[in-house]
Image 1 (cartoon, rainbow, N blue to C red):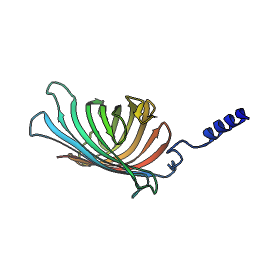
Image 2: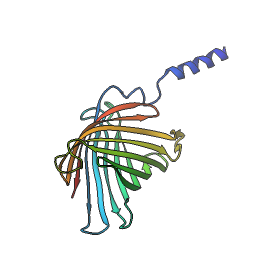
Image 3: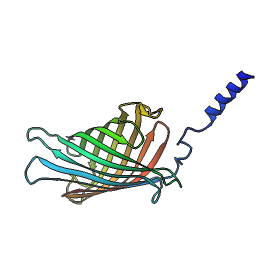
Image 4: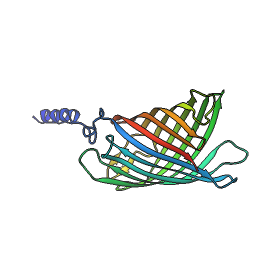
Length: 232
């Protein structure tokens, strides 16, 4: 009798969806609306960069995340790299009709290496390390690597009025598994793959429209992305 009850419990636990998984409709298209900016202080090596992102579980209204981020940048004269030390404030919303949110403060350091191949392949390699202070969780860290690729289509360079193909793939790895209160996460956090069409309005302003597929250890979802990229 005890053995039957034990086997029944195991079967039920396998058939029941994992917490959070069943609530997310993976077939529903989400949408992220984003603004990125950067500038330098006159002719110096110092500058600032940041972004504002309004992310939705659907195309509008069901908040996934509101992200406000900014940092101080430094570009050494003798090396083709941009270093950033920054801070982000993140408000994460629950899926569907649940209006509860979770707040996060995030400190990060990153290195961005631009590499050009031939006349038309513009790549950037970004390494980012994050220290995360998430509401009701223990201190967490995360490692991220992003490979960006821009390919101009109607011109050989990314000049004014250039149409271009934009792609990236970003891998996220958690620094810790235990996050407090008896909860844990996988070492693999998520992966994002993105394809978009871009247009250079002028040297200081670009726009992009594309789709990003985000896959975590428990769900995956497509996100429409519309972004402005401005150099001030």
